Length: 196
Image (cartoon, rainbow, N blue to C red; front, side):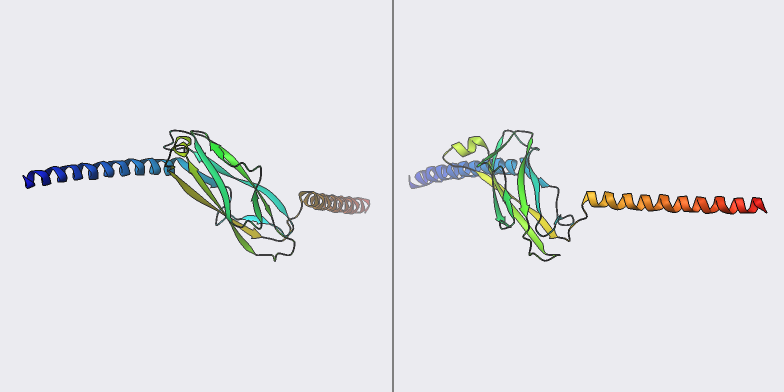
């Protein structure tokens, strides 16, 4: 009789274990699917940092993507975890809804203080937490996060396009004057040779 009770208890215990394993596997598949579906891209990376001068402000952006493996919209929240002294999210909403199969831009304003030395490097780190709308409404919210690093390099002031155009105009004008003088000299030499 005891062995029959033990078998029933073990059978019930095994069913619970298998059931819990199945639930955990399902949750893991959902989380992995969300990770595969959500991405953050930027036009700046380690070998191509944002170049900015002291006292300058630039508006840049990152792109939140809801692509491969996506089955529904994703809700993302962004927080600057490093570099908040030089960067801030602009047009900030509490939540960004990234549509299924789509992408949205998140704007960032970067301002470098005037007194920063040339060659100084910064890293702006933005952490995006995301979940699906259906997950965030339930009693157990399952989500993940993606971290994006934007490297910043402080450089000397770049030549303004207007100044570069003025410089090119002067070079063109000097070249035309030199060509005119050269043509005048050649004509004068030809006239002198003909008169002899």
